Length: 213
Image 1 (tube, rainbow, N blue to C red):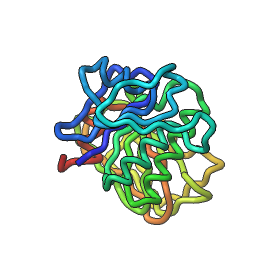
Image 2 (cartoon, rainbow, N blue to C red; image 1 turned 90 degrees about the vertical axis):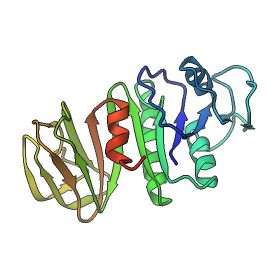
Image 3 (cartoon, helix red, strand yellow; image 1 turned 120 degrees about the vertical axis):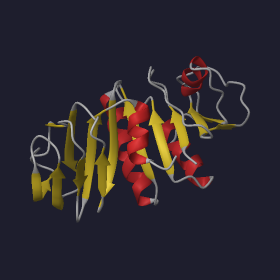
Image 4 (cartoon, helix red, strand yellow; image 1 turned 30 degrees about the horizontal axis):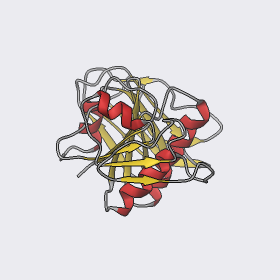
């Protein structure tokens, strides 16, 4: 089962797979309800919302805390046993919050989970010692960035610019702005972590990362 988390930034393309567990992070409760979805759990300090909402289940935290509201929601999802996450409302606003949510993908990876951060037509995930395959109909750009000091054995097949057994570092953006070109493609890394970004709909991105759901 997938855990879907919605935070405060509005997102028009809010795809929620059937049977998902739904967590609203603070003001994300308004976003879910605007899409006709009632969250199973609402988490946060509710400073951005301005009041404590009525909810099926609610966990309130103090305003002065170390975790972002998104991180609080992720912790609750992990605590409940989920290992597949879709994070909405975490990009396109303040850059510091966007970067915090990108780092949250790293937190999920360290806890044996996989996260998809989605917003404004862009999907983001963290790939560690593995691969991601894309179907032939995929369109737009795809970029990879080293998430750590270095990443070895980076290979991109089926894309406009092929790459084979390359080494990437976090100081040179070699993997930026590749493109899908109408055939099945794959991005892989043998040793290290890659931040993988591609243009997509939320549903198509979910099918790429979580094909059995």
